[in-house]
Amino acid sequence: MSEKILSIENLNIDYQTSSGYFRAVNGVSLQIGQDEVFGIVGESGSGKSTLCNGFLRLLPGNSLVTADHMDFQGQEILKMKEREFRHIRWEQISYIPQSAMNTLNPILTIGQHFYETIEAHEGRKSREELHRRTTEALARVNLQPEIAHRYAHELSGGMKQRVCIAMATLLSPKLIVADEPTSALDVISQKSVLQILSAVRKNLKASMIMIGHDMALQAQISHRMGIMYAGYFVEIGSTEDIFHRPVHPYTQGLIRAIPSIRRRDDISALAACELSEKERLRLRTPRPLREVSAGHFVADYS
Ligand SMILES: Nc1ncnc2c1ncn2[C@@H]1O[C@H](COP(=O)(O)OP(=O)(O)OP(=O)(O)O)[C@@H](O)[C@H]1O
Ligand SMILES: [Mg+2]
Image (cartoon, rainbow, N blue to C red; front, side, top):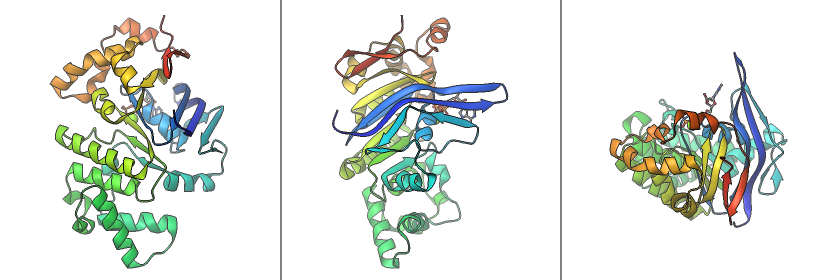
């Protein structure tokens, strides 16, 4: 891996619920290289969003985050003051939340979203500069300048998602965290939004963590992938290793399930990973990863 941009060691995240603590992320360690796209795949409830929201400090109050260390660009972010971290979160790490397009404010024009984002981080700017930077950002995601005058409800899902990508890259982040950026879209829009996201990222030379359900779609843009199950990574490796040499039975099940999921056009159905209920239950206990070949890590499953 190239030089690391993000390094997380032994991250645990618990939610306090009425029936006690529930561990949603269990001993996760993760390293992301410069200019690298890391895809996180896993079924619903496996802890993908919790993991990313955890290091981005965006979790609700009933959560408890602990880790041995979390390092972003050589800075320890685990104990950093909130005020300091807030700068890092938007200016250096940008976030495209799950269902991002629904977070657009219905009473603001698209342009106003961009102006507010720029001024919130960089202070007051001239009308011309705001307009120019918004037009440039929209052009990066293949949207015409007049989109700035429209409201969210006037745009299609794919267009709204492109607006969110443009906003997330407005401040030239070093790391983009995209939580299922395409899953609310139809198959055609999914492809084009993914291509645009990928091109914008490349241009910025940013690293990216991309969460998704769809192995095949993820594989198209990820350099490495991590397969999550029950709050831990069962396998991490190059996209090539994960796809062509999967070792863990859960990963193998996900890959076998791809054609049937594609047929049903139901990408949220990855729970259909072909494992027996007994096997799924047994695998819920997290196991440590071991390196089976260079850069290919698999959790013990015996
Ligand atoms: N605020 C919360 N309070 C209690 N439990 C929660 C909370 N948010 C998530 N969980 C639980 O934590 C686990 C992981 O949830 P998370 O949303 O991280 O999964 P995910 O992999 O992102 O799923 P999806 O693919 O559906 O987005 C789930 O069992 C979920 O029910
Ligand atoms: Mg999620």
